[in-house]
Length: 100
Image (tube, rainbow, N blue to C red; front, side, top):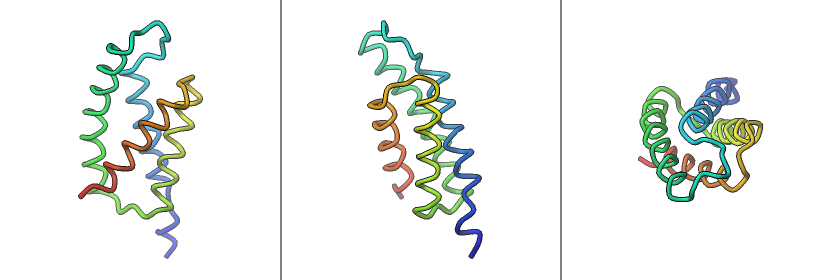
């Protein structure tokens, strides 16, 4: 029962995904939309591989999923990324976590 509430691995994974975004998508307002989208798509490819691997290792319930996405969004916010990008990527992550 207590394993159901243990979300440490999910939080760590959320931070790992945020780190991937910060590595591949520079937080530069001068970066053009096309270039930024290209970098976001590359980061999504890298994240998708990790998401598939994580889904095989961990069983996620709604609590763990919420903690994962919360850690992801806060890490991006702390790194100075805009809220729209964080929300868009968090939605994308949720869709891929729930995909079969």
